[in-house]
Length: 261
Picture 1 (cartoon, rainbow, N blue to C red):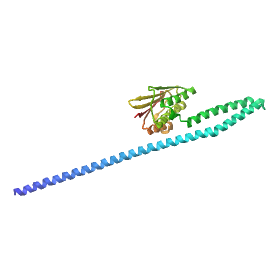
Picture 2: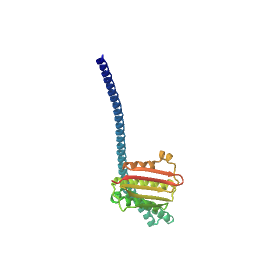
Picture 3: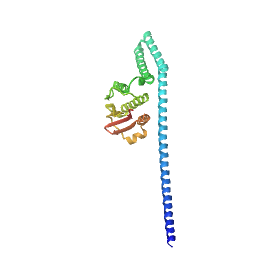
């Protein structure tokens, strides 16, 4: 009788041991399944980010090639035709066959020459290799000087280091971002001052852009603000962190942080 009770107890213990082991197995299986799903989703998200960066990088390369092509066309085609038109107006003024319109001809010649100079400058900016030849500090200062020459607002450039060595793509993207911000501020902000600040802090490149314009509602402008979206996408190509804040009646601030490693 005692042996029979012992067998029953052993059977019950074994049953519960098997049940607990089975239950633990199910829990581990479910947990592993969830971890696998999380890992799969993480890998999928990472692949999407990599694909997006590659796509943006390709778009930037295509855009650069297109700009270079346009620059060459301006120089070789449009520029030569304007030069020929300028020569014709000079010849007409020299021959003086119609004295009553000489002044008008000379004015036309002046306009053509001014347009030709502007087109040559545009062609040079699209085709030259200044980004390769200069450091980022020189490049950003040049952009600020160009806007200052327009005398529409004051642009101040600040930098606390003598030189920052960056790859061509990083320099190119930072220059394009600054150009975009300057153009947006000139066209839409009605600002009096723009401040461009470049800093090197704890192995990070910090770019700060600020204007004292009329500002805007960030939530509404992001839906249709091509310029802001372009800046954000460009920053993402080089692994930059893009932040922007704007207050109506106060102005707009943009900051970009990229690793200097």
